[in-house]
Image 1: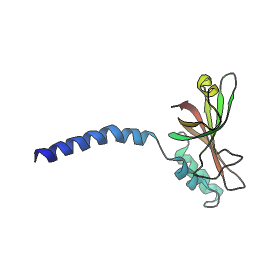
Image 2: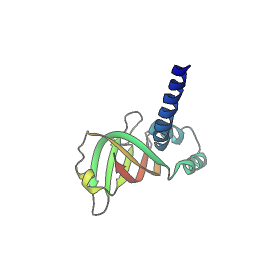
Image 3: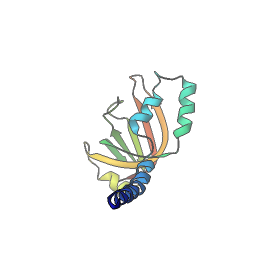
Image 4: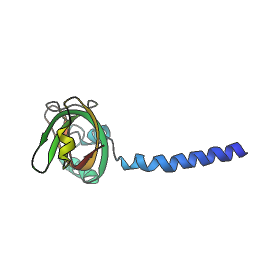
Length: 137
């Protein structure tokens, strides 16, 4: 009986510690793209689907394809190879962290979090998604 009580306590503790982290990640990149593919929905349906997600915070990862820095903002173009890409990219990460963005290298694996900002369907079936207010983790 003591062993089952301890096991319950450990399970409850792990659930409390791990569940909020999983929830903070938001929808996964692949799951969101699957809902935004033009082949699956009308433009009106896509618009309604996007309304559910726009502004939500997500935590994703991918491979750096390009990084550009300006005076106030950086744009990092990322590839998630689990879905089709458009010109080698399917995620645009907009951040004010110029210092970290400048250190990123093409081909580097990165994790980032940001707010869902916009999406676009391309003729080749790819969906690109842009994030704003992003941080590199």
